[in-house]
Length: 193
Length: 228
Image: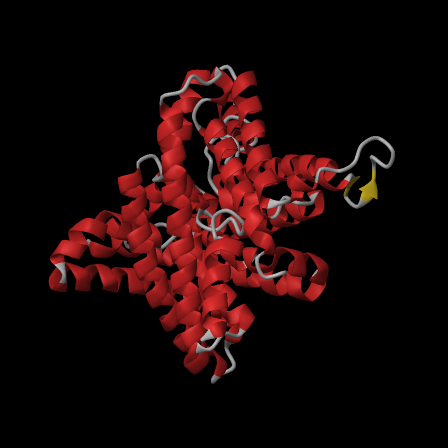
């Protein structure tokens, strides 16, 4: 249990996907303009990463490792993730239409979100067990959502400020992200990592 | 003839300045931020991605007439993943240092939006020759952007450049530059400099705003393709 809590806390704060591992920067910059869209995207990412952690873990263990095909990891993972996203979308539409209407438009954006593939790869690299993998996936996605929601608050303030022309648009967003990231550096001493 | 030549030149140089994938189109931001703690890693990632882009552009422009429109995106992704695996194996075998430094960002080339975007926007509409030029131009632009960011971060953050000590007695390196925060900061300032010195200021802003979405854009297509 202690191990699981450690994995979760370090995935959310210490190794935050966006702010310290640079995974999922595209959606981080793209949909963090409003807190509501940031939450929607975050919800979809939590859902998909948690599922994909389990599925890619199983694919790796029972398909790739048992047939000695680990060199095909990249191809298999990306196809599994693409299929999973499609599957989740179809199932949600039929079974839970309310959840689908909340997350629906964000789901297709997730296949090429490098956070999903990144978490699958990190799980293999660290040789997690299935339970650890699912907890890690869930916690990293929560960390991603946290970073995005926090940052969307900052961005809503930026919208109304006066900014030099050269810095308008992307540059000021990136510099604000740098400041948010500095705040997360503070967590690094948490476990003496 | 001159017209054709000019066209070739345009395709080749497009990626370096006018449509630099990192600095203007804001594609492939994850690797640009993650691996640029050192100039050497920036170049390594740039060349690896250029190789994948070259391979995928060639194959995709060759098979563009055979592949049905509906399964286009899954096919493209599989081709890209294949070349990424090749690069991963080559680096593992011949450049183990770089392989270790770049870590999971090598397999993550698969989801580098630059490559899928070029497949979708260029290679599936143009001849093999033009696609090669496009890949070289875009890959070159990507590599240069990473080199610039990597150099700035390495010099300010570690006082070295390609491992050579430069600032021994000049100033103490600011460690923040090689931390993640420094990545965002340097990227922000480099893009600001590009906007400042480019004549297309206003147009840029629109691109920048739409651009975080452009990954999203290719995926939106992706889904349409799958479902149809």
